[in-house]
Amino acid sequence: MSHCTKNIVFIFGILFLLAVLIVPYNSSHVSFELDSRTKDVLKVTKNQSGYIFLPTYLILRARMDSDDETRDFYHLNTVRLAAEIVLILFLGFLDYFLFCRFWRKSR
Image 1: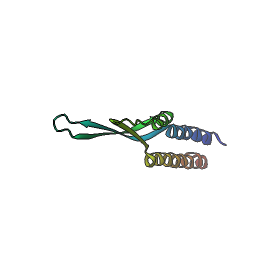
Image 2 (image 1 turned 30 degrees about the horizontal axis):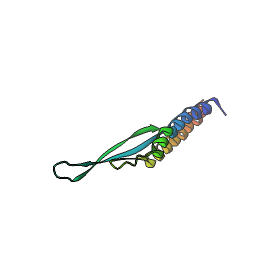
Image 3 (image 1 turned 135 degrees about the vertical axis):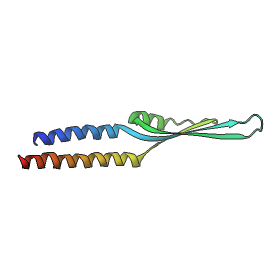
Image 4 (image 1 turned 180 degrees about the vertical axis):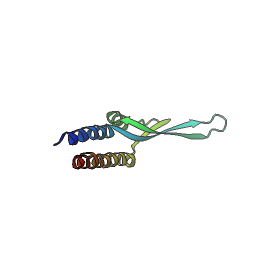
């Protein structure tokens, strides 16, 4: 392997590893509240999305709350994760062909 190839594999390997370890997620926090005036049960939902460290996501997913008043749901955003991984791989191959192959031929 040439020096250029090693550098590209190293850089995009680190980006791939970060994409796998820091995953996108969606969460929903559902709580049930009793209205004191009308005695109706109100369902309040709060949605959140972002990025989270994979072991933390697995811990949160394993201990989803199942109280009567609140529930938390965590879901992995697989479409966004797959798009990130495909983009990193595509850019890695593109950089390899542009910089390593094309640059070597022009020298």
